[in-house]
Amino acid sequence: MKISVVIIAFNEEDRLADALISCKNIADEIIVVDSYSTDKTVEIAKQNGAIIIQHEFKNYGDQKNFAMKQAKNNWVLNLDADERVSDELKKEILNIKKKDIKEDNGFSAYKIKRKTSYLGRWIKHSGWYPDKKIRLFKKDKSHWEGRIHEGLFVDGPISSELNGDILHYTYRDVTDHIKRLNRYSKMQAEDIVKKGKKLLYLRVIILPPITFVRFYIWKMGVLDGFPGFLIALISSWATAMKYIKAIEL
Image 1 (cartoon, rainbow, N blue to C red):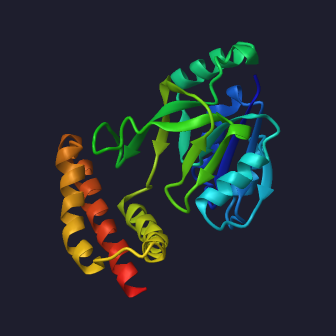
Image 2 (image 1 turned 60 degrees about the vertical axis):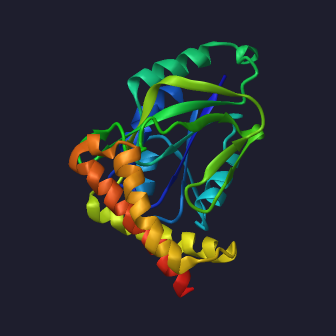
């Protein structure tokens, strides 16, 4: 069993090296699809033995589908530049690789837990953990859908999650968090308008406070301390933004 690690990147010079180093001993090839970075992302990828392919970014689903198709191996491990493979997960994947490909029990993909660091703290609640994602999969059985918050759709059985986590070093700081959600909200607003959703003024009044309660109370963000409060607050703001921008459109 051979695995291609595939990463999409844009201006990730401060985080990409750690992602590449974390997966070197489990990867039979590493592919970085770069959307024309203006920093040292490409140089860093080359220094760490990755194959570099540059491709214009349109949306996350399309970019990940393109990247997946560049892999020479059928088994693909998808990582983001702000993610790392934990030591425990490495051992799990190496154990899978030791088995003959015929002994994969017919699985088309594996779920992996993702643990996120935010403001210097591992978030264990707030709806952010265990955050199970399908990240190890057969490319001929899989495809990505979605412009943002893209999802992987798999034809075939999916294994229960492996031991170990993908470590997610998400937003660099609160400013990065807000800027990124503000950028996402534009695409979300376009999707809202495209789908013809109604009662937008009512949604912008009702849904933000519901979002705050969902993250802070229902998903136990209160147990994550001040970072949990910020996650709920910024998520509420982001909900308002996407509907305000939809009203604008």
